[in-house]
Image 1 (cartoon, rainbow, N blue to C red):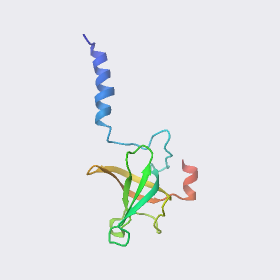
Image 2: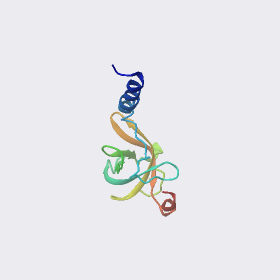
Image 3: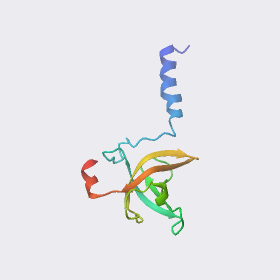
Image 4: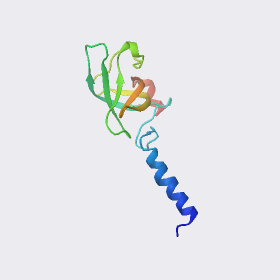
Length: 118
């Protein structure tokens, strides 16, 4: 018969971790973190450039698949004046799973001022 402490440990370490599998935190040892808790990503592709609702996709350590973020001015997600280029590093904030895909609700370019904040 399984002891209560063993069953409790199994529940806490297996089932709870399975429930939290969709929730990601940038506190991954291999992930560089910004001091304001943003995750650093690398822009890999764009969608809808030239339309009213352009967006970009970045790879971020610790996230399966790309993390998208809007570049549309009316959405108030993109915080930098210039759009990112392919391969540019960006800082993504408030990353959430929406409709099965990762989205950042705020984003900006990674700049020289961020170098000392890792």
